[in-house]
Amino acid sequence: MVEIHKVDLSLPSFENSYRRLTPDIKQQAKEAIKKLLSCGKSPFPKSLCFEKMKGYKNPNIYAIHITPNNSHKASFEIIKNVAVFRQIGTHKELDRAP
Image 1 (cartoon, helix red, strand yellow):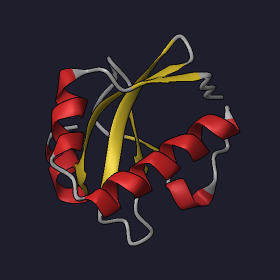
Image 2 (spheres, helix red, strand yellow):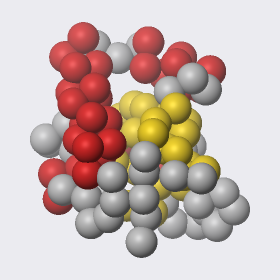
Image 3 (cartoon, one colour):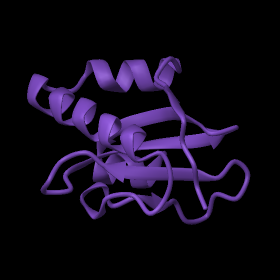
């Protein structure tokens, strides 16, 4: 079972990719991250499409979809119940480099 008690949005890779988003996508990202944090543990709401990224065992990388049409998602690692966000961007961008 995955548990998340806090989020960390301070990685430069996340900050840089977040800065490039449109205001609308930024707002949707804030809402999705709040929803992830408010749940605390799996199972997470289906609207987030919480998933473990395939091919990454160490570190384990997870992702959530931040838009209803699944065009954008965010990736993160979970370290001691803290979701450390790595990247945010289009679905295609994150599938290539989470």
